[in-house]
Image (tube, rainbow over all chains, first blue to last red):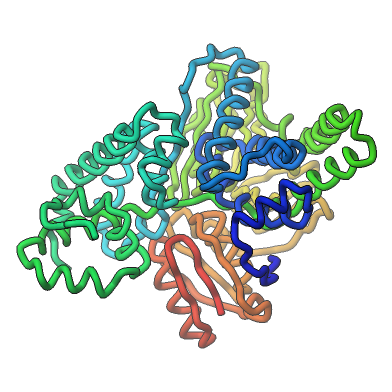
Length: 197
Length: 321
């Protein structure tokens, strides 16, 4: 693993340099954002090769089309939106190739609790963790995506709405709240929220 | 400053500052102060805390080696473009398809998706028991995938495709079905007559351990107690105690003078953790013992106690000093 200390350049300078064709700046953008984009994209498919292929194409195009690039105000959102669009397009092509009917916006978004959570020491708690895991499966893919962006990537509602191409910001908030309410209900039913330990 | 007076549990859960406090301990002073000043919100806060704590997701991260490989492909594509701007697009496609060609082995491996195929996958820390059409029993370890045709016939060998790790107890000579049973993996296949064995296929190598009966691994005859590993660099056969390799079925982890590097590989492959070593020397430290597979905390404590190393765990990342 490379643990080289890279001095933190501010985003605006970095993107300006990238636009001017600076390959080091491009490399830095890649290092900063590839892991984030990968762990997001891999939630839509378990095909690792496809995700890497999409991202390879995506970053190559980012550099080749640098001159037409508007320096993004929020690079993280910008990259997530663009990479997601590319991935969904490619997944659509793959589906068509497999002879399945193409459905707009029909995608899976997988969300699983971390192993640590599933391995809570006491057995009855493990059972609750499993319940919670099951309730996660019951959420819609869009709810899962919204709470992932909110909880894991700490994104604002406006950014979530942008990434998920929702017409209004309030829809992002609704998705997150509905998911939380459903999970809370499951945990309450199991008495997980009442127990003191 | 947000006015939290009218917040209910769900509002706290959704609040960025509250999340940051629970997840990373940020804004600690503010939140402890606020809690003290608003004792009537204690139960809402407790509920919200528990929810945020519960919502820690497993994340599949890119391997640094994969990241480097992709960057090399990109650099190659960009360098080609520089040399010949006019045919940029064509070259790019060429390089990308070359990269795709190198993955052909992997792609060939995926059976064409058809409704007649059954696919069973397990997530991290999950094992599943599967009964095959011939009555054979498979225990699929975590983070693994098993595929097979839905209906089997007398004219075609019984075949399954494995990615990950599984234990097989194969029915011998089932009536009306083909006598041969075969497990395919990217590094080769195991031919079976009716027997019990373990196949471990991760990180570009496949390891087969035979408990009873007789199998052939890529034309190599194995007898009980044999371990055969096949990887790109060649194959290796040695005698082992099969029990050690089958312990995962009973949710136990058995180590005998095992280097921490291979324990780290298990934590990553089976449980979905990311393990980082701060000092390379720690990779060669050894551990012996039996640990419950569903309490990784105990395993980590043992590693700390035996070697006096500092081990920190945050979400799905384990850092060994």
